[in-house]
Length: 74
Image 1 (cartoon, rainbow, N blue to C red):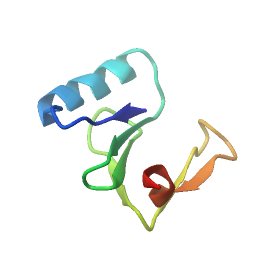
Image 2 (image 1 turned 120 degrees about the vertical axis):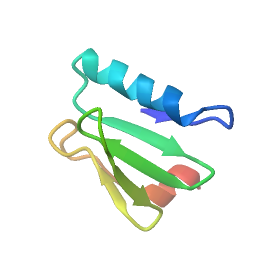
Image 3 (image 1 turned 45 degrees about the vertical axis):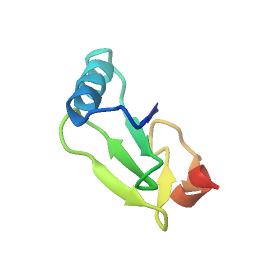
């Protein structure tokens, strides 16, 4: 999980995501409190953007985990 701060630049975040996957991480969540969203990466490229109304799950990495994205910003 990576929580963006106001000073995070997009290139630096992409570098961090690549670094996680280089260390065999299987899923990365990037939480953006300004946009109130979570971007889910299953590979270093792309990522699925989830907004407040969506549900974030742990898929096969954290079986049974499920939270509304809005809960991260309550």
